[in-house]
Image (cartoon, rainbow over all chains, first blue to last red; front, side):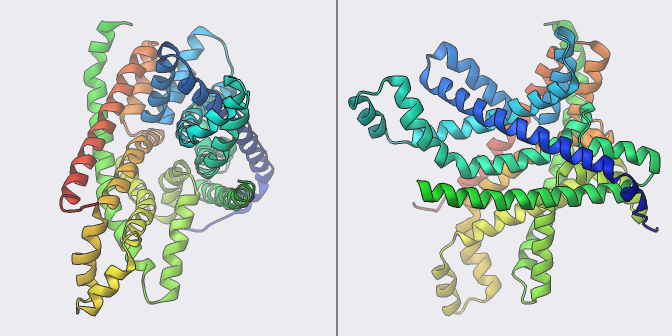
Length: 217
Length: 218
């Protein structure tokens, strides 16, 4: 066994492209899942049962089945009814999956905001919706930040799973490079290192954001 | 919904679900020993050993399970490590969950008030005897619950083993979707099986939790 990292260096531009794609997908999915999670949480807490039960069922379904199964279902299932590109399936699949996890967190943190806040706001003349959006949600959001950060760190690692449905992110592009160079070990260890680096950066960012959030609380 | 088709594919999916259970149970079993070893190494007297254990945990938790699987399965032969897909799934699963579980075990042990340790030691119990008779019984409840969460994650992660062509639930589901063109039926059944497995795990965890906290008054 001898290692030869020169193919990794030759194909480094490809890997850089992969990192870019992975990070782009990560940002889009993070925005989608956090905003969507908030909307889903508000709807499932403040609407009548006919609306929020199906939504709660979906949250539960997304949380109890594996991501890859959901991706396969969306990839092969949606393809029968509508024509959408794989990248949209990947982003939506990952987005919905983490939307469910984030909604679960938001539901808990919204509930944790004291009832007195709602009552005080209403008695000061804010309407029902205005109270939710200006008084309850900001407080709930700050409380959700640590867990949201954890979820997003896990989510970025799960972007690698999207390669299974053929999305050209870091793992998929390196698999292409491996099929040409036959150097799986070198490439996968490089990818692991890249992911580890991303992970460390995200953890640093998380603790920075948490400190800022704690200061504003 | 095509009920006939669903009846027809149920045995196939059941067989695959058994592989999912098998691979997760084995990974959990070996993962527990790896986790215990890691906890022991993290409290070692020698700094380099402590540091190594921490580095291992950090790296495993900081890289995707998916990449770890690919690395060991396709990259392993370069190191002379040739594993069949099932064994590879168990080994990588165990080493992966072991790192997470060591944090869960450590957290549970550290949740016990340090006065308990000091009191026990000053009463003449040794380090191991203190751990066995004083610390572990008090931390068992929390430990069981956090390991239960990890066991559920392990079951869901086992779907990724399909990528190295172990015929478990997700792999079989994907193959059936491809051959029957009925994604909704296949997804409903396979999702149902995952849900049954996960609720069974939750039931077992709750049972063990009750047993472990029988004598705990809060």
